[in-house]
Length: 464
Ligand code: PHE
Image (cartoon, protein in one colour):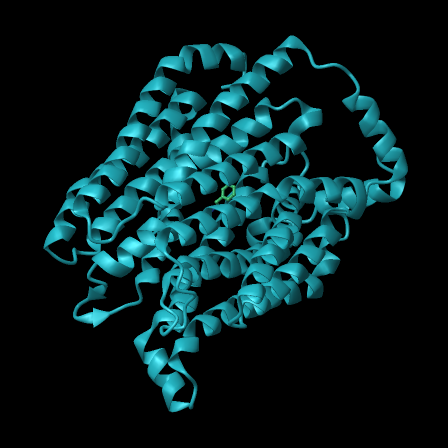
């Protein structure tokens, strides 16, 4: 049980509704910290492959597509793999609050490292960002959870707000970082100030560093609001946890873990397609799309703001829809299947689009359409996945199971990088094969999951 002091603090938090929209005040601290962390992550990522494949004269690293896409996959995989030791370090040693702080500091150093044009600093930067994100990302989500009691009616809406913060950061990131890295007017500005315009990439990386620094400032200045959450577990608590953890799993537990495993496999495939946006679709946008609206050119990386923008637009609609449907809403495996169907359909759009690139650059609306369908898929699968995992996992394994959820993102990202190695710019047939293959693969896996649904439901038992 909690110590008396802890209990008092908890009661404090539970009655705290002084923050945004009647939520505990700590939520806004976590919201803005995660907003800036995601800003730095997605901002840097929006130009990463472009920087790697740009020629040395353009200030890039001059990597070929295969090398760049493989590295993209490996890096983004590690960003989420480190979530497992990051979560453990918080549980066992640091407490979530300190882990987030440390993670943020490490991330800032990572981005600063990338400001320098040197391979050593480049690899060093990627490594630091991966380590820092592992310390920060899972633990900040845990802290959001600890702001509420299990049955607090504000809990889900707190997570939805937090998800908004993530996506607002992800929306603004390519717009600003991408502009600094690729924007023509910014390059002219650099020249007018006497800088080499080929350094523009590093201004972009610098903006990511500034973003994470702002996140840290928010976090530190408002740390008082987080007094009751994310603290180190006391020796007594650890002992109790160990006692709970040593009770054997029941057969119901095992069945539910089995259901989580099925979701896990299909989620990997979903992210593998979804995360093309930072890799092959980023190159697609740069080389094959007319990046202009009303005669004005825009940086190709801006197209990566489409998905977060659609999430922000569609998320409220979907949460309304699920509430409205109430008990008539589809079960989790059906929602998962729908997620795969929509992302499969999204890639069907790219088949004619890829074919048309043989005749020259195509309209950006093809990618906008793809991203729109993808986000419908995401709305069916991602938030549902998270809440299903938290409902299905045996209580003592929730933390680890959340780590497993990140693991799916990790493997999915690696696969995304691998698939992107097949991107060849001036070969429409190859592009049709690549994107058509992704579409067919996802639609087939949706079919398989649909067939498995009755069995998965059985494994899930009373949870739906
Ligand atoms: N948009 C989500 C985020 O950045 C994507 C994600 C899902 C990442 C699941 C990790 C795990 O948080």
